[in-house]
Length: 183
Image (cartoon, rainbow, N blue to C red; front, side, top):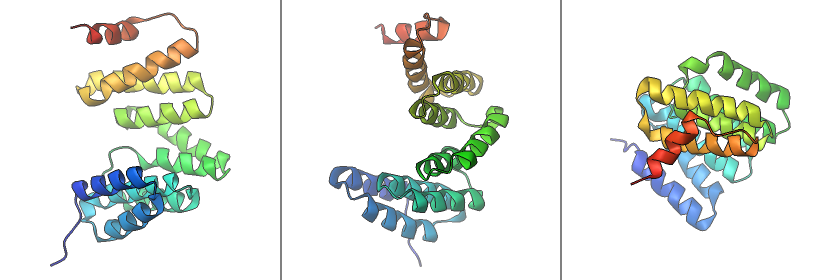
């Protein structure tokens, strides 16, 4: 009987990598575990390995992992195309990354709030604050539509920071963030 790694084992590997800075070891171990994963967990396992390859400053291996997760087609916490776009940008393959982001934008109603958050963060890093704000706002609206409170506060804070950076006045979503801080 083969023992299959669970979320807790991946979390522990990530914790140790953060503590030691040895993301290569974490990526190698996670990649091995992803090969053994049940089909329903494989794509997410591959994505997590790819994230470690990115932190190990190996965007090519990360891109390979994210491509494998997309090909697997299994469920993931966030759309692996966002992660792949980040890796492609790191590799200087901007046109391919932009194509992935355009595909995500075309299917924005079908993505998760977490995916919206990741796209907004990526666009912020790229200096596209307006685009990032659009994705953060879409994420907030998806949270309301789907009753997803887990990402709501994170997206509201990200959205607020973007609006401040853009010099925009406070709006109703910003006021929601203010009211959630009161006792």
